[in-house]
Image 1 (cartoon, rainbow, N blue to C red):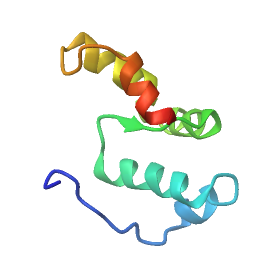
Image 2: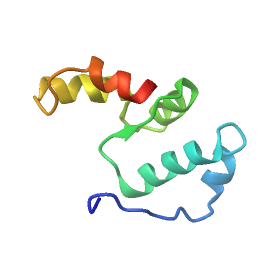
Image 3: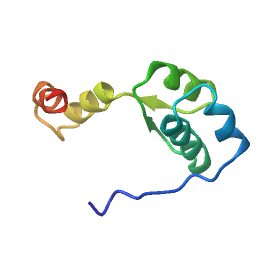
Length: 87
């Protein structure tokens, strides 16, 4: 998958602060989105979404991303994709 890029998040005071209240991976996602000036952050955990939103980030969850994919006709239906994710 050439379109996936792995990036390392440098240890920052923001990362340290966020890892006190969030899981490390979610904290890193928020910090990286902030550093990159991301248009949108895909994250499902409600607490993390609240923190990201408070920091001025736009967020979307998996279901929202799937609904948008269906609306833009990237997928035909949401339900079969959800079933694959669950199983």
